[in-house]
Figure 1 (cartoon, one colour):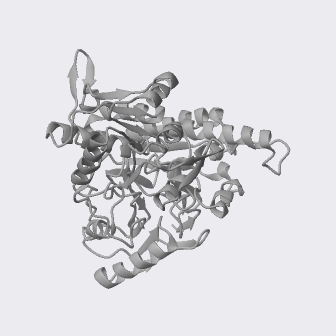
Figure 2 (cartoon, helix red, strand yellow):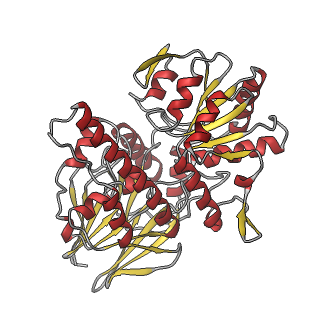
Amino acid sequence: MNIKIKFLGAAKSVTGSKYLLQVDDKKILVDCGMFQGQKELRLRNWDKLPVDPRQIDIVVITHAHIDHTGYLPRLVKDGFSGKIICTAATEDLMSIMLLDAAKLQEEEALFAAKKGFSKHEDPKPLFNTDDVKLVMQLVESHSFKSEFNLLPNVSVTFHIAGHILGAAIVELKVSGKSQQKKIIFSGDLGRYNDPIMFDPEAIAEADILLTESTYGDRLNPMTNVTEQLATIVNETYANEGTLVIPAFAVGRTQSLIYYFHQLIEAKKIPMLPVFVDSPMAISVTNLYEKHAGLHKIKVTESRHELISIFDTPNIHFCNTSESSKALNSMKKPGIIISASGMATGGRVLHHLYHRLRNENDTLLFAGYQAEGSRGRSILEGDKFVKIFGEDVPVRCHVREVHGLSAHADQSELLRWLSNFKKAPKTTFIVHGEEASSIVFSNVIQQKLGWNTLIPEYLQSVELFSGI
């Protein structure tokens, strides 16, 4: 038996995760992510996949983020018809996130056609909502810690990765005539001692390991998050202003709700109304109650309804565009959490359009702001930002809170790696910018003495032969 791997994404980049594992004549794709960020990466989404989707036997998904799942609708559109395997919470999240991504694709294609931005006469989306519906028909979900066969000689087990709801470390066991080999895909690892998600599960053995390296070159301590938030909320309250927070719908919004609930309970901030204004964030928040066993938030049943901190009286979900627009005229102090997290689109733009010009209001960034994003421009001190074609003055207070990332930092990645009883034959450093991967690779070699390899995009590596 021969085993090879081909890196179709997340090689010297943090997006487009796709790893093609070939076991003799069978092909398993682990993750099927969309490339995001810089244009040269995004253009790869339109390139023909180096393998015919019809020849892929099965897809295994680590978690629901678009850089790990967003290419699935295109894969199915181009002929893939096998099973898509993931955890139950990932299945639920994927349905929400892929439909949202499809709507964005459709809107962008219509906008390009209307404005004449595209070199194509009739620009098409990468995929549409119908493609997403076909994807969800192929999904088969499994619980954590239950080993099951993908193929007669390949089994898979999902282990808790933390990070986001349903996220898994994937353990593949390949049985040959005389040997069994274990291949571990870390997926995206969460943080230790996270207030909501469980710690990444310790794995003791791997013949081959693929580890993410998003924050492989830096430390990102979670200390003082509550103190930072309390200071900013109290400052806004003293100014009789509104606090606007652009936040990712999955994970970040729910973490912020948790922190504000804790601060109000401890009487460290006033009992302010918290408005969650993101349709996707509202749908995702409901899943935390459905999948109560996968996180630390207490969920109880009352009158046949699941109840948690997300149901407290000061949390308000803006389910309609009318309730969202009503916030623009709000004069009393309050907190608005809205997507997108980098202020690149979504409902938060309406809030920024109205609030940036108010000296009493505060804009709080609670996550990484990528180069070229509107959030990054504001954070770097631009006096005006363009919203809806208008230059809007930035007169409000601008603040930033650190430590809310859902990704393990360098020390936490090393902590997870230290659970392995012996060095894997090869440790592939993936899912990180090139500089981050290089630093992390060097740290692993120096501290653990392991053999590491940073793969190139589209590189093929033979893992085992004749087993």
